[in-house]
Image (cartoon, rainbow, N blue to C red; front, side, top):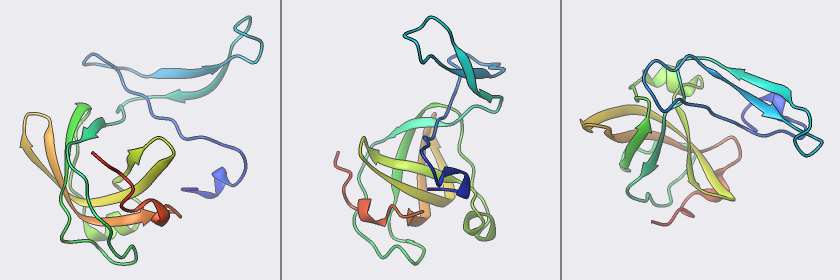
Length: 140
């Protein structure tokens, strides 16, 4: 649960466009096998940054900033930006890291562009919002 709006049944969603100039989209739901559709959520720009990790990070204490781990990310869409420590502690720059069924929520203070669409994330808050159980479960 990232915020109190998720205290009941819910799910998280992100949306991005495949082309530059993406102006947004709508998440739709059908409860009758596709006969009718209803809007669930509108998404506008900027799109979500989506990518894959090219390495794994190990187990750390989740109550302190992890200054030793480096998480390498290659983006398919979007861009990443560094934030102040205060902004990170206040809820900015959170990412889902892991695999289906074992997601860890990580916050990153420093996002360094290495080349093209590859970034290195460091100064991490690990196991956010009750996901400390998933620390170290991601495998390459």
